[in-house]
Length: 438
Image (cartoon, rainbow, N blue to C red):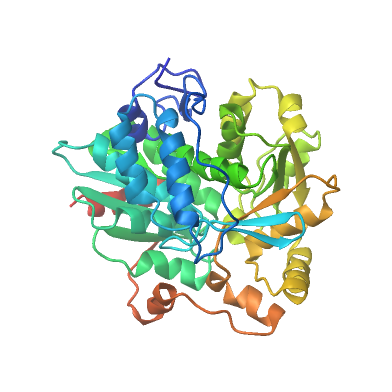
């Protein structure tokens, strides 16, 4: 049965409604009525070579994505899904063996140099397909702890009939991350919130649950709370497990969307030995994996800012996926919390040993991998979620050299910024939504 219900038992709706609503009317997150299964009547291409950024990985990725993606969206014509794949996955995702048995899946070669480009670009292309012919404008409302905002703003920039309103903690992201949102102009509205990411996420949810405002502005979300941004992330798990058979995935974990996509990939048929959730000092989920009851906590500021989440939205999806059975979830996922000091030491150690440069978020995952007592035949695939050049203040002093900056990131320094600073209140956000609607 196709269609999308919610984690709180909402009625089943078609994909278009799930995408455009973003959040269920009762506050639940949309999920597939049935977890999709990868095709079993077709054979994907033969395993390819491990690739570098200049290799043929993009072609391999596209072939696998075209094979797998239609199964993730069963109500959408195959030709439509194929077009969306071709429009969105226009960059490689190299899989690099940094040390023996430790592979880094580089998810940062998209236009904003963060893993969020995969889901954001796919969602924007899919929304344009399913929303075709709608006369009224809409607002894509998104909260970000670092990279989501830039990826969503870039993906939806210039899209006719769409405005993007992105909220970020005023002191909680790097300068380059901020500039990826504040220098775009056009239909992108950047709001610096006097608070934490959890405040930003709360405001987005409050706006959606305010039925009057949600309908008036035709709000939709491009956070990982939106199922159309979450499901495409399954594709790179399929790809990685195709190139490196039966790996254990090590996932930098903040709002838990990336981990949720991986666990859905496993349910869909991806062969894996399990998952390691790697968190920074915001370790509430790690304590939960280790047996404690989960409690929302105030977020702690760290150098891996995109993971500074005290109340992860996708925990609700994870528990739904396991039917509320926390013990079953803990069998598939182990957790490791890594301090800033340990992540910094990892950046230095890996660079000295291999010349490879990790960003702070990927370093949290890599350090978690180093602590894992892996069997000799088990490969670890570490998800690298952002380009290290986005965090020069956290990396360059550690490795003792400047990081080569991609030209599009360097160009941000010469663009004027445009943003508004607001209080962490729904009333303040509604004023800005009214401006974005005009």
